[in-house]
Structures are given as C-alpha cells and as structure tokens.
Image (cartoon, rainbow, N blue to C red):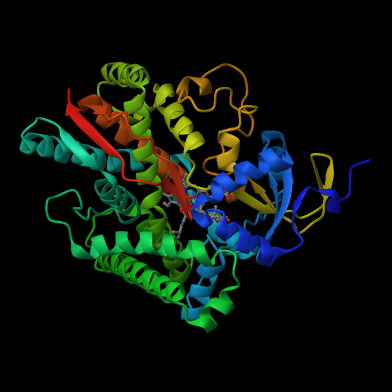
Length: 469
Ligand code: HEM
Ligand code: 2DC
C-alpha cells in the first residue's frame, strides 16, 4: 500500500526557522540550487515549508505526468501573493494570470483563440519577422560604426527592446520603434518597471502580503510603484488602439492586433481584456529576451552546433524562397535549440499545481489541496533524466521515440503559457535572422551562472559578439 503523506521526507515542520536558514544559506537568489541540492539529499520527492509556503517537490517526468494528468479542467498554480495584493490594493481586475475557476476558464478560452490557435498564430509570422529584420539592420549598423567590423557587448538591453517591440507588434498591430537610435523614454521606463516588478516580487514570495503592506516596507512600495508604471504604460497603448478602432482609422484588411480582435469580437468586457493584455505586455519582455541571450551564449560556446543550425536555416531559406512560414516547417533543429536552451535555462524555476484529489507520487499518498511543484531547473540538469545534462546538445530532442513530459519550459495543459506561440515564433524568427547574417561569438573564459530573481536570469552580464558573415 502507498505510504502516508507525513512520511514524505523533508523539512516541513518549522516554516519560519526554515525560511531563516534559507536566507542564511545563499538566500533567495540561489533558490534553484537549493532545490537541486534538496533533491540530492532527500531523493525524488521532498516536502518543505518556507514561511507560510508549504510544498511537495518532485523532479521526475513520470511524477510530472501523474500531476498534470490529474489537474482537471480548472488547473491552478501558485498565485504569486504580491501580484494579487497589488491588484487588490489598487482595485484592479485580475487577468488570466491570477484568475481562478470558471472566470479564468472563460477568459482563457477567448484569449486562446487570439494568441494560441493555429489560425491566429500564422498572422504573427510576418509581424515578428519584421522586428527580427530590424534587429539585424541595427546590429549591422552597430558593427559598421564600431571600427572593428563586429558588434560586441552585453545585449540584454537591446534584447529587452526587441522583445517589447515584438510583443507590442502582435498585441497592438503597431510598431513602437524601439530598434531605432532614439528610444521613447516611456518604453524604456516600462522595461525598467517590469524588471523592478520581478526583482521586488522575489523577497515577498513567502511572506503574507498583508504583513508587507502593514510594514509599509520599501520592497512593497517599490513593487506598487513598478506595477503602477506597467499599468499606466499599457493603458496608454490600449487607449490608442481603442481610439483608432472607434475612429475607424484602420482599414478592415489591416491586422488589428490581439487587442483589436478581442475588442471587435466583443465577447469579453473591456476591463478583462485590459487586465490580460497588460499581463501579456509585461510577460513578453524579460522571458523571451533572456532565453534568446542564453541561446546565443550556448551557440557561441558550441560552434559546431551553430554551424549545423545555420546550415539548416540556409537550406530552408533556399527551399522556401524566403517564405518564413514555410521555413518554420522545415527547421527542426531550430526548435530543438530553443527546447535545449529552456532545459538548461528555464524561465520558471518550478511549475506548480494544487492537487484536486489524492494522487500517488513516488508511492506516497498526496492529499487534495496540496501545492506540488515540478523542479524544472533541477529536472533539466538531472543526469537520470537527461544524459550528460551539462552538454548543450539540441540533437537530443531529435532522437526517435516519445519524450513525454520532458519539454516543459512553457508549462503544460490548459493552464500552460498563454504567450507560448508568440514566444516560440519570436525566438525562432530572431535566431533565423541572426544566423543568416552573423556569426555569434563569445569569450570562453567566463563561466556564467544563474540567479533567481523571480524568473531565472544570468548572474552576470553576458558579453557576445555578432560578426557579419
Ligand atoms: C504562464 C513560461 C513568455 C504570458 C507561463 C508559465 C510558464 C511560462 C512556465 C506557467 C505555465 C503553467 O503553469 O503551466 C514562459 C516562457 C516564456 C514565456 C519560458 C518565453 C521564453 C511569455 C510571453 C507572454 C507570456 C511572451 C505574453 C505574450 C504568460 C501568461 C501566463 C504565462 C499570461 C499565465 C497563463 C494563465 O495562467 O492562464 N509562462 N513564458 N509568457 N505566461 Fe509565459
Ligand atoms: C516563481 O515559487 C517561483 O511566465 C514561485 O510571463 C512559483 C512561481 C509561480 C508562478 C511563476 C513564477 C514562479 C515565475 C514567473 C512565471 C510565473 C507564472 C507566469 C510567470 C513563470 C515559478 C511568467 C514570467 C509570466 C509573467 C507575467 C506577468 C509579468 C504579468
């Protein structure tokens, strides 16, 4: 018979003491390493309590399968407390990110039609490709002006702008012009606000938000300030599109953007549209830009893989006569490269679900209502799951046979990432354009680690070189 819940190994009795120890041992920025270490210490399942945050943690794809197959029609993940607290504090409606139950489901189904459905997604290709081309144009100009024929530096700020420009093109059907020499200060402030918002979330994750608000802590004030800036800037973009639609400034043939389509369909109240569109705009900056930065670093460190990938892209281009949609159908290694990047460098340190009924994990009985986390970072580097995990080898994804519950970078099921298709296309098209035009290089000497800043990010600046081919 399966073993009882209270026999699951781990430290789950003294939540506050654990939180204190956790802070002392490298703290929050090493959350992913601390999880990996606990799996080594306790095995493939452990129970933990940090402050008020109680979890069961799993690492094996088989257990992830059990968890997700039992998630039901209304899956729920951990609701980041300070994000909920901000909306309650300012009286703002939740978007899909924070909604639950039937209200989540009905919004989500409508949003899926505009952001995930294959028919809608095809229209993103030319929009995202155009932004990629602009990045290439800018990189070529930078290389020309540098004096040594190539462009070297920490590209994170450039990539933030690329990512915001991309997601806005798809959401609003409009260009912001962030890849020009002059960048609107408002857009720059938005980018900084999203980074601030993530950064200030992390220390408040495992504390009750009511406590932080009463303390009027500096972190909470900064957090509110960051969200205020995010909502204010998103509102401006949304108002613009709304006005253009009302004044019928756009011809009916033109692409209306996800926002325009949602307004025209008139199925979702404007306040709910605004809440979810704001989440998508904010969710579209650090996620894809950091993943692309990691992808370029890995390709620079594995020149053989880079050559193979370039050959695939160039062959696809010849065959498809430059038709990007066609090219995307024959670039398997490119897709595998993004999976491999997210294996080693996931944006989300864990995936989480509340159980709705009893599940058996590693032969323990897990009761309903338990928060179970899949240790995505730890799984990606577990040699039992991925042989030679330290090697960046996109080809591992191309081997024959099923790979169930291995590629979980965007989550799973009906609650998976809403921006998944936008993100994938944006990243595939970016890498295509870069590989067609530049060699990606880096100095080998520095080892770059990861830090937890709510999402996982590089622990130091990444220096890359783009050398025109
Ligand atoms: C949720 C990853 C980009 C918007 C999620 C989740 C993950 C994730 C792991 C949780 C899924 C789950 O619980 O099963 C990523 C990665 C990205 C990325 C790796 C890029 C590399 C984006 C972009 C957008 C976005 C570009 C906006 C356009 C969202 C939203 C949710 C979400 C709104 C919540 C969905 C819901 O609760 O219904 N993402 N994301 N993400 N993501 Fe992304
Ligand atoms: C953070 O313990 C660590 O995609 C917590 O685009 C568990 C947790 C819960 C939800 C996760 C979060 C972690 C990391 C960031 C994620 C978030 C769900 C969505 C969000 C993964 C793993 C993200 C980055 C969204 C953000 C949209 C937002 C800016 C409006």
